[in-house]
Image (cartoon, rainbow, N blue to C red; front, side, top):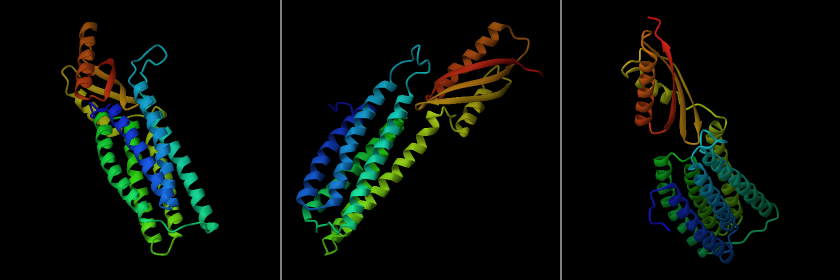
Length: 289
């Protein structure tokens, strides 16, 4: 199942398997160890599993080649999967916060046992390792869904750390701190969800690549043989890839064939040098000088 761990799909499969393990561990530790915060954390793992499945499908759809209905490919499926992860986090955070607040208001809390402490500690260690690995894969393949998955893992680390602190203090005869830790869990999850949505809505709105990146490409084009000037350059994000357009000035006395060859040379050079650029449409204009 994990023959090649250096791919978005493999990282998602590994995340899925580990989340299943942690779901069982935290649910057992929370129920038997009498920790409401850990049970809430287990619910977080359950929805992480749902998110992993959606990311899996999103990555597979994003890899499909362009077709008649989607001439720019299916890259935004990856971004949609990332947004879905955020929605799952919002639902999780809202439910956990509600349950924790209800326990505090009704004074319905117990003193956790050391079984809950052990489960929370194991979760922190496993999730931190998984976060570092998943983030590395997400950045390597520029997959927003995998990066969102990594952000979810990091939120789980902070959540479980808050859970652990609440459990340990609750064991010192202050059991109310266990549901308070549950509120901490909820607040952090909601904060992480907002960040993921903010990071991905730009792509869904067909936003442009970063200005600095466009400037890098423009500067590169200016230095290509035959290009006198770059009048303008613009682009749009589709998933984690760029589709760019540029207008360049060439000598006005060139033949159509010569102008076409320069445009093709510009396109091939940019695509080769900037892997994130899937296509570049070059518009040729005569240089007025």
